[in-house]
Image 1 (cartoon, rainbow, N blue to C red):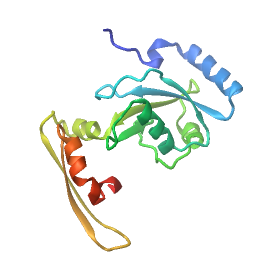
Image 2: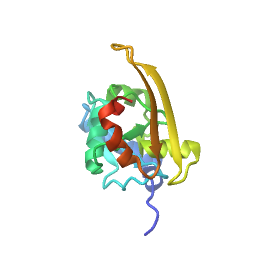
Image 3: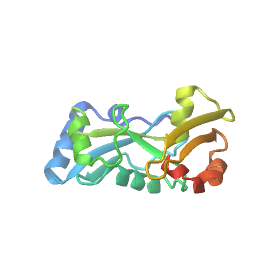
Image 4: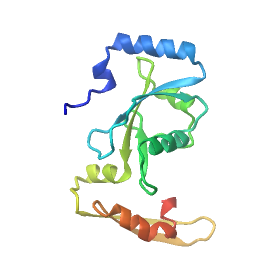
Length: 170
């Protein structure tokens, strides 16, 4: 099986520009988005790379749609990056588009999983332990949360162990 080409490799700049202009003219209430999988992730390839996303949709809503299309199990976090920036999940796609769109008229996003972001930044291989220490005070209670332990090969079981202890708010 050959390497899958990126959208920019597959189509020339002029082809991409022509397509985005056509899409925007036909669907002015939508944002043309290209989603590509980060090269060093275990995420499955998506069947489609191009999406027409409602301008008023939030990044968080779009991530939820992508997660369901990738058939991710609950507890596996998915992140989208735009030009190596993690947009706020409450941000609307029209705002993200106007700030980060490419010259070809598309908004390019890459998808990654949480554990792969941490592992790649710390150069961890599977099976090596990663400790994340969090010390913050919960505003309403004054209580502190302190330690979360993650292991690159056992993230699912750790999630199951700690999910009831507000890890989902991490």
